[in-house]
Structures are given as C-alpha cells and as structure tokens.
Image (cartoon, rainbow, N blue to C red):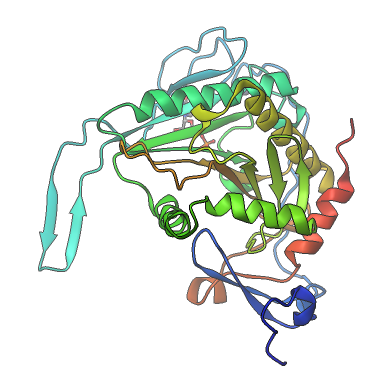
Length: 351
Ligand code: H2U
Ligand code: ZN
C-alpha cells in the first residue's frame, strides 16, 4: 500500500488495515475493516428479560427500601445520592508511603464514593426518562462535582455509570456512581496531558478543534443540538463507542449555563434512545464524565466531555472481547467508526 499523501482523506486507506491515533490519549488503535464479516461460534450473551416493576420491594435503590448496609432510602421523587455502603475509597485513609528495594512504591489514597439514583422508577433507564428528568441528573452531577471537588483532600471527581449485567452493573435500577479521590486517575491524567499540550500550542482546547473538524466532515456525527455533539470518535475502540462534548469549551459541568445543561440532557436522551434502538434491547455500556481536576489549578485546557463504552459488537448477544492481541499489543476493531456512526444515525430517535 502506498503511503497516504499529506492531507489525504480516509479514502486513501481503502479497506486496508491501518492504525488511528487517539488524540485524547496518544494511544493507537488498529482498524481492520476487511475483517468485519468473520464468522462467530463463540460466546453469546443472554439477553436480560426487560419487564421490571415500577417499584421493586427487594431493590436496594428503590425509594423507601432498606439498603444492604442497613440504612433506609428516603421516599425520593427525583434523584437521590448517598455514600456508597461498600466504598472503594475512604476519607480516613491516612497519610503513608511505602518504598521497597527502591523499586516498589505505594501511597495511601484518600477519597470517597457516592451512588446516584437517576430516578425513583425501578423500571426506567436514561433513554426512557424525559429530558427534564435527565436534566435533574446533570444538575446533581454538577452539584456533586462542585461539592466534592471543593474538599482539600479531593483532586479529581469521576462520575460514571455501569449499565447492564454485561458491564458488571449490580442492579437494574437506574443509577451511577461517583468516585472522588486525591489523585487524578490514569485515564483522565493522560487526557489532561494531551489537552494541555494542545492548548499550550494553539490557545484553543483540543476538543474544540476536534469538534469543529468533525462537524465539517459529518461522517462520524450521531446527534447534535445547539450546545452538545455526540459522535463516534475517529479512534473509537469499542464498536459503538461515542464521545459527547460541549460545543463551548468549558472545563466542567458547573460552567454550563441552564440552556447548556438542557442541551446535555437532550443529547444524552437522543444518544441512549439510539443505543436501545440499535439491537432492540436495553443497551449496556460504561459511561463517564471527564472534566477538569479539582486540584485548585485553572485548567483552561480541559474540555468537558463524556465517553460511552458499550461492549456489544454485532447483535444483542455478541460482545467485543479485549483479549489476546489487545492485552498484549493494542486495541483493535473490525467495523469502522464511520459505519458505526452511520448505523447509529439510521436508528432514529423515535419521537
Ligand atoms: P454498580 O451497579 O455500578 O456496581 O453500582 C452500585 C453500587 O451501589 C455499588 O458500588 C453500592 C455498591 O457498593 N451499593 C450500596 O452502596 N448500598 C447497597 O445497599 C447496595 C449497593
Ligand atoms: Zn429499584
């Protein structure tokens, strides 16, 4: 294959295996478009039955019920947030460091974990909630980021959702988590470095430049409104991975105007409705909000965004495995990000 000319588009690559650069992490992903049609005789996932009651008396997260730790949930009507009864991080971790043989290092890590119920309704998930209710989730995310981030012992607030048994979600009640800690964790730290380098060189955020390029090209856009864009990133690893970013470069959720928060809720609805429509099942994913560290620095390089990492590959029952080459080498995909975006656009929003 001849080298692509500088400035050449994707067509120059044809159907050939190629690598794409992830702008946010500096990592490469191997894309093998010709391989999408290989047969599958391996594991298939069970499709969970999707009939749930509005209130489940045995659910730890439903209003009025007792949680596993013995506390009782209030009779909440919108969102509800509480300290995780089985928190991975604790504020009282103390201050200690270990160094062994000049090679092995460890340090205590203070932090705290919260659980957020998106809705009192046990039978809903984000795509079935109305935009006003999703706006309530966005507001709570912003408030929690502000409140936790203001603590002197918290340098980073990670908001995320595991959805579906396939992603290790422990309960179908619509909920997410927040892990706040002293250090900036690896994935966010890497993205922070790349964004800082771009901002230092160009005076604009990396994602502002990336979004305007993608909006010009159009082929990877899934949905857009006045304030937010959802797209399959050029470097997507997961088959239907998406990136949701604010059009205006803001460093965190608290900087969003009321209209922008509505815009974020709208785009989350429109994206997740498309996900559910793709294979006709409640679409599993891990999603999370990336925003500036809360270490007291201004961080003008940070551009608020969300990642959606769904594991499903070609149907409700076949998921992508990250094994073999991906463990030893680097991530790889068969279906191109462009065709995934086209399929998600084709689902429609049904409203
Ligand atoms: P996941 O479904 O993403 O695992 O999130 C559920 C979290 O809720 C999980 O971290 C917590 C678990 O520790 N939890 C409680 O804090 N109290 C409970 O009664 C049940 C689950
Ligand atoms: Zn419930």
